[in-house]
Image 1 (cartoon, rainbow, N blue to C red):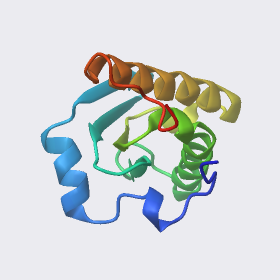
Image 2 (cartoon, rainbow, N blue to C red):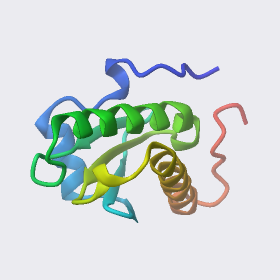
Image 3 (cartoon, rainbow, N blue to C red):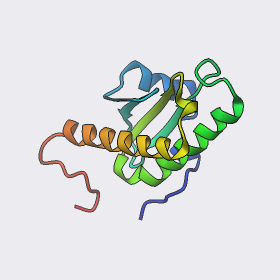
Length: 131
């Protein structure tokens, strides 16, 4: 059973980790007012980084709400994502969406990334670690 937590090991922490995803993303999932960039990591779990600037979401309350929601959605969907480093880049207007709409949108985006990852892995290689 994969841990459903969101500890330090599930986060992108250093500028270098973020840069590696920005420089050569292997997957992209654009959504309404948001962009997800992903890159395979050599780990057995996904890691998440958030870029939610003051320019795109003015109020700190809104930025914090978004971070909470995105982390929660990630936490619930991380089993789909395997070994990916994912950076979520917020765009103008993301803070205007309702919580339910955000959860729904991120659910779709995680699935899209998981699908891209499955298509990118060589044929004959199973996604399941228990194969």
